[in-house]
Length: 389
Image (tube, rainbow, N blue to C red; front, side, top):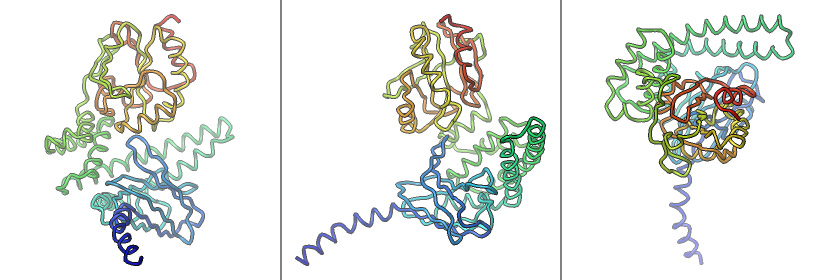
């Protein structure tokens, strides 16, 4: 019997070892953060941070653990007064152990010790701008405190609050510029272009797309041109290309752009398949609150006008499973399409930079209207300008 039990244990040992190797641990030790503060662990789903767990600081410490099957991007945020509206980037792999040390609530610059190479690169970028990032976090916490004062404030006080917030944001703009140049300088010294490196370049490309700093634009473009063809064509590289070299955007009155798309079942689709009806296209993401708030209005339009209008929700999420689960969760029983390219595919050709973004297309394939943002009744009002109910 003893020999048999020993044999079973020996057979199970590799399974137990494999299970243990998938587990990651995150230990935090903090000073200047009182017990009772809530720390939240989030998983980066691309356009969405989903909560994996929360822990309350006790005796200056917090702890998380879970399973990882591959390199996974995560984030820590703090709930409560004094924490900035920022997060700490965490990278885990199967079996990794992460140790975090902080001296205050400025969590984006907490020290992270880990053997994961991406985490070490992430810390290099943090250290290159630590003083500026700490100043930015302090201003962010001040802004959050000001915005909380709007509750119950009269018009005069609200006006003063917004004036103070605008002043803080102007200061932050200058500090963000310093961080951008620090990151750019470090990019050129790191030879290995991992996900962190590409992510920093992607953020910089987004900054220059919507900014006016021509020197930064030129230098970021030079770094992009030094990428390999494989890097230029991966997910991050394609987004960088669109930011630096935006495609021609379809204007009202012009024939629409089109491309090969997929529906939830994986079938090939094109916008041309729906010609003969007006198209209302909703560019959205699972991480966009206003997008989700608009779902009842989209559903009502679909049910009332489906004989004349094809309502199409176009997902800008790259993760197919995340997209499918969201469609089921929100009971989106109208047309759902995606090209899997995020904001760098068809969305870019319609000028999508903020979401929700809507377009109305004629039965002949001509762009009739395009706008950003959702408000109660706005969708119905816009459609009524072109389609008789």
